[in-house]
Length: 356
Image (cartoon, rainbow, N blue to C red; front, side, top):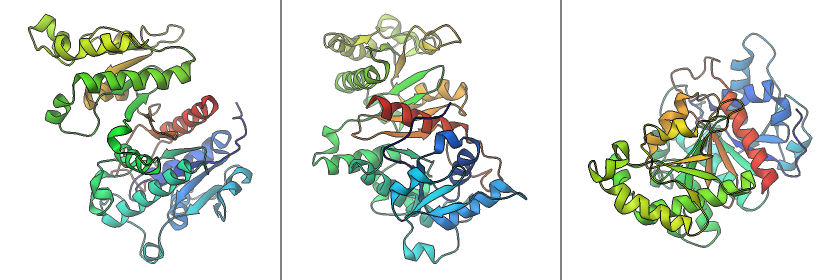
C-alpha cells in the first residue's frame, strides 16, 4: 500500500556508525520505498555510502544524495538515500568509525544526529523523527552533554523541556514498546533494579496511567483498556508477597479511574501479558499493559519478535519512534542486519502523524 504524501519530511537519525543502524536504514530504503519516501537520514554521507556498499555486496549500491534543504527529501526518487550532513568538519577529516567498537567519536556523531533531528522536530521543520540505535557506552564516552543521559529517551526529554522553557520534572515521558500483538508502557526506564523498585510510587504509577491513557486515546479514538501489572509475584497475593499492590499501585489505579482511565486492578505479572496479547481475529483483553519496570515489560514484547517491535516515546511534544533492537556490534558491517523493525518504526511514525 502506498503511504500518503507528506507535507514535511521524516528525519531518520543514523545511530551509532559502528553498529547496524546505517545498514538497516539503507535496507529500509531498498526494500520499502513506499514507506521511506519523504524520509531522509540525519548523519554522515561517507558513513551512509559505506553502508550502501555493504548492503549491495557485489551488486549496485543505492545512490546517496547530499541535501541542501530538508524539503528536498520529499522529491527524491525511490531507492535514493537522502542525507542531511551533520558530522562536524573535525569528524569528517577522520577515518570512519570501525565496526563493532565502542568509541567516543561514534558516540558523539550519534548524539549530534539526535540533537539536530530533535531540534528540527521541535521547530516544526520535520514531521517526526525515527532514531536508529545508539550505544549508551559510546554516548557516555563522548562527554558533555551526552554523558548526562543514559539513552535517547532522557536526551529527548531534556531537549524538549529546554525548548518549552520548562523543567524535565514538568515534562514526564514514558517508553512504549509495541508490535502487532502487544503494547507495553513502562513506569521506569533506564535505571538500576533498586532504583526501579523505588520508582513504583503512587505519583509515578498515576502519572504513567494518565500519559498512557491520553496518548493511546489519540491513536485508538477511544479510551484504551489498560492492564496493570503487579510488581510482586502473584500481584502480592493479598499482601503475602509484598504490599505495593495494596498500598501504591491499587490506589493509583483508583485515582486514575476517577479521571476516566480504564485501568484494571493489579494483575499477576506472569499472566497479564498473555491476557493482553492480540491474536489474528482475536483482540486481547487489554489494549496496553502498564509494566512496573524495564525488563518486566520488554521481555515479553521482545520474545514475540524484535523484527516487528517499535519503541515510541510518549509525552514528548514531537513524534519519536525507534526500532526495538540495539546496535548489534557483533554483526555490524556484515550485511546481515534486518530492517524490519526500522520499517515498522517509520510506519508507526506515519500513523502517529496522521492522528496528530
